[in-house]
Image 1 (spheres, one colour):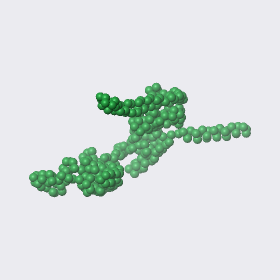
Image 2 (spheres, helix red, strand yellow):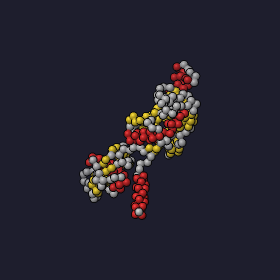
Image 3 (cartoon, one colour):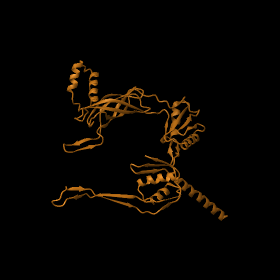
Length: 380
């Protein structure tokens, strides 16, 4: 009997230990709202052309800047006959205190009329800096050509050009600035997230059938038979019959977005050859292969020599080019990489080769061609 009890205790302890080990290797869980968007909640980019004044000699001098200034003067009532206007335009050779700019803002799906939003301003002419400038009133339009906001205010560049005649220092990007809360919303967008008043859709930012299935399972566990998979990027949720008001519908949506799920990931290797960065996901696997990698080093040395004729001899003194080329190839042994069951094993195997991140780019490409790399290879 004591032996049976001891065996039972050992079995329970072993199960607990195995459970802890498995949980240690489980993929992390995230909230549904961190990997999805609700259909209908669409922000809109607003754009407009405006004028910045008050620049200390760093403005633009292009024809478009001059035309924009004349059009603004006409709108403000400073009109004149064509001859006087032509004379004024010829006399105005410098507009170094003005710049024609592109103004951009983002209208959120629930931004109401009268609220303020931030504005980004960038030069559209040859201005050198917007430091110290003031953005004049600029209408901002959406894709439907409707004015949704009006922007104005002092520009903050958090930088500029400093120095003197001999040298100067430029901090940040002086031709791009920001007006915090510089636009007042005058028209709001209508947001429709509950279709027919009875359902909504969750849009996956990284489409995956596995992630969609996990989301649908989590929602159905909380509210049975409400979530269905439309496609790898869309999960449709029908409101339960108990949810019979807009307040309850929003509360139910909030509860769904707070649920924890395990997102699905593809086996992928991403290589940025410009920066030498290599990133691979946890599902990347490698079959057993043998690899050797040695760098080929080529050196060239220019040693020009002067060729001079003998005394009283005919000829000219010339410089004769001389180039010494040397080629060195590293001798490295063949490394046998076994089948890797985890990402840590793969990283350890690749580190054993002693290669740089840039060399990994060519190695991964060769592994893909041989079929030993079981992952999607993406080059940036």
